[in-house]
Image 1: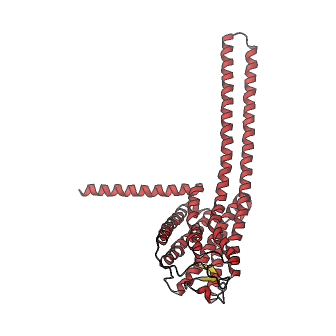
Image 2: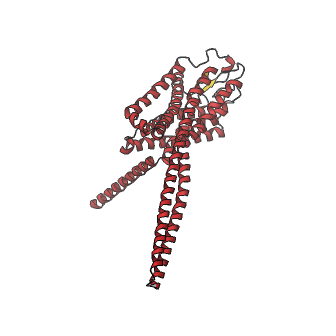
Image 3: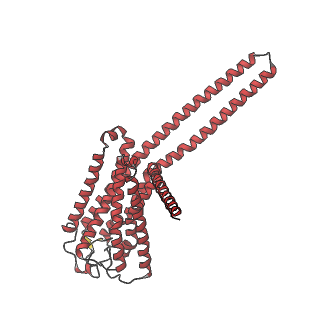
Length: 392
């Protein structure tokens, strides 16, 4: 990470980058290679997500996927700019570029992380309105509303980041010289107030919104599942009562018919067999439904909570360490560089793959896209083969 804050004048362990780390050690090489591979998956995943939504009319017609597309775009920008620049910085040990480019990179780092957080919030709010307030959703959900929300998020957080970096709003105005001993010129030393404020607006507020909307979605989904299960049980009970009534009626009819004993015996056996078969099928169907509804409930739980879960895993360690560091200045630089930064930037990695594995329409569109791409390659190969045969 590029960020840090100054608390104790005699302690420089609370910074985000240690400028004295110039040796090209085996651990640093492994870390750089790992970040390079991670960045490749970030670029590929978000590029596929953008391409899938852009080329699928069914997805483009839904405002929800506009918001998912917006999240993929900011994650792609983050994986093309901030992550590789930080990887190069880690490899060199000192900032290899100029001070102006340093400020631009810090501004992009702040902006992209906040935009990613609130883009996730927009996706969650859209899903919340769609499930919990469907009439309100269809009355206010429109492309202009989604586009306006996305533009507002970008403008607000780019402006906030630019003011923080270039307007000396967040920098410590009187840093002690000992704080800068051995530090890189690109370290952005924050004030304690800004460190806490950043944690609130960039993590705590989005997390509270995501938690509230996800829990409401979960409650509504479980209610719908339970209601469907209750309706199905009532239908099955009515069918069972109808079968028993028909069996009793046929039994009474056969008791009154005494002219043909063998025929009566055959009829009774057939009726009993039919009743037993119907009861068996009904029990099997009831069992499958009872197994299906808990599975649907778990699927609904996992789908709506997985975004919140990864949001916590990716962002919470860094922001928790930043707030703790305000009070104790006890977090070593390598903790931020080698561990917390990896979790922080991995949020841009997991987002596209979450939708690949959990969203039914997205998965269908992705399969269709790959199928068309494969068929195009096969047809092109066939055309080249036919051209080669004709030339011969």
